[in-house]
Length: 187
Image (cartoon, rainbow, N blue to C red; front, side, top):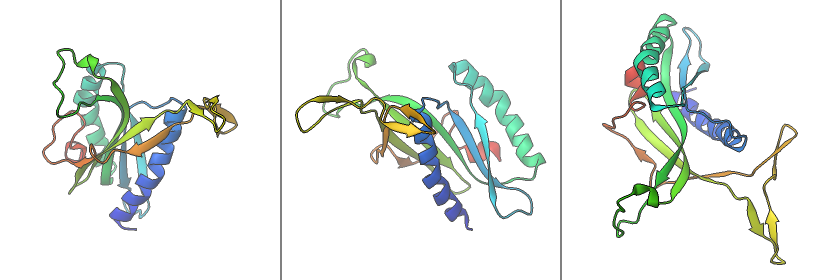
């Protein structure tokens, strides 16, 4: 299985699992390190939760957790294929023609799923709009509550869709941030 096949399979399965986490409202930021163990062909996924209660927690994680992760990767002779960073976020978009308000909070926020991919030869970001449809109008013109429409393991949850936002999904080169260029930071 090539590295590209591994990435494709991961992307296909990862989005479904993330969508389930969003539906259950259980998504906190995390890193996945997709790697091969020494002398093994099949890749493994190392799941690394990120403390998300404050910017200080994230900063401490980067400052102290990253060096420990890097050391563990080397110590275990993992061959890293790629690394992802996944988080829910709020973005504010404004038409290019509109002036920027003094208070940015006047711009209504949109909920998105942010997944960055980092490998030896690629940095990219995929952004998905999170759509929470709780009501719809039926063919009789009646408002129908769709709140508990999805069943997962016998439990009912609110229906959630994720749609790729091609405008915001880009190849990154030279991007800077705590969770940018993870392959270079951790290998």
